[in-house]
Length: 165
Image 1 (cartoon, rainbow, N blue to C red):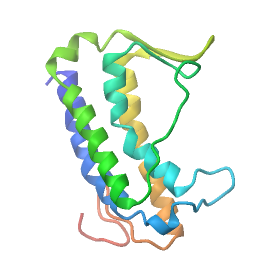
Image 2 (cartoon, one colour):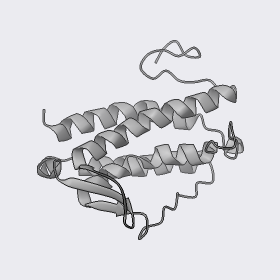
Image 3 (cartoon, one colour):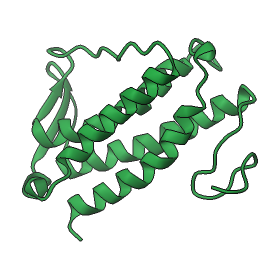
Image 4 (cartoon, one colour):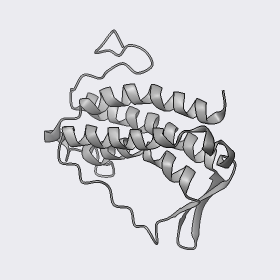
């Protein structure tokens, strides 16, 4: 299996658990945050939902410059919109995980804010980081949901709330 195939397999596996987690996010808790320095539930869930689209960005561009492209998160109004946004981002990312992009995976991709360069990594590493970010932030969302007394679905095995996964 080539790297594109491995990324697609990992994205598909992560999507099932991510979807179950995002389904649990209650609209009436969108503004809740566990600490003033923490993201709100809405901001965190929206970030998780957008991450599959970073695959497309990594494969089809050579950089992201925040000075020229200020970050504007999607304005999600409710859980239904959150899930629709995730499905749209997921379809976008999946659509670019095709063999034709295998040849660009070692090409550099830059994250910057004007002259300040945050990182220059191979596109493959940006994709891997995006997939890791999904898992990382999904776990963070799990803590938020636990603090809100919302049952957590199983991820890599059963959870304390669901013995089947």
